[in-house]
Image 1: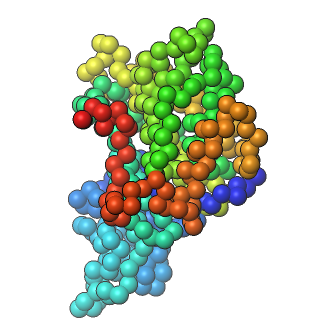
Image 2: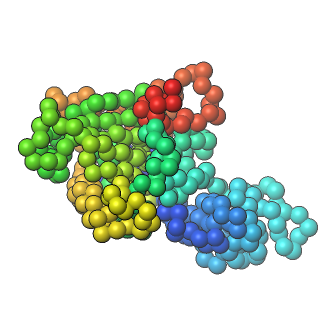
Length: 357
């Protein structure tokens, strides 16, 4: 891939692991946004993510560091750091060093995943990670009607040369469906909302041979919370929900994760495992996503792109929306000036808002 001119440090939520990969007491090394980091789970089950180096003398906390209760202990001199990155104990002194703090990142666990909030200016989160089973207005109990996505419903690619924005642009690139996914017609928007940091892109689509735009009775809803976090729900076809997540590793590469929920087949409602049917459907969805990944990982960012008339509206809206997440971009884009700066936007699909009205 030709190196993208887009910043690899956009503000937002980014997946850095699946929840099951961090057991209580685990300390995991990772690298994202060109920073060495550690993720660890305390005795109470809380996940924290820090920059990797102890503020005392610079030991890497991922190599020999261990969890004691609610603290991470440095392997070099035993200094203890709490979930906020603050020193709370120096074992050979009477009091901690209150003046030093390791950079920590806001963390949430949603949809079987661990997410961190990244912002070059260290601003607090101003929108949230959407929940797979409440963001679309469904009863949370609906999760029981889907096969568990872990471990058989995931895809992971490490350090591919692509950018999170490519994935978001894919959602408005309707022409590619016909050529990459072999749909019988080009989809069409049913909703197209880029008014704030959370966007909504819904469209009609079908995969059956002979289907037309006029006869299609199926489609996709999507909620996009920034550039790093997206969830989708299908309707009128094989029941599935997906969660693509692309997280910058350095100035050229990203990790790509994809999680798939498949609706349970009649007669399998009580199963807790991914059945043969569930695995077959999961693999089909993953295969379609992987076809996109193959394109993205060899793509050059085209600016300005040579858009056709039918492509102009979607691409222009998305690229204008994306600017707000980059360093120096307008973070007030689409936000109500009266809305408190500290108040996070809950990214519900409009159908959820209507259902609760």
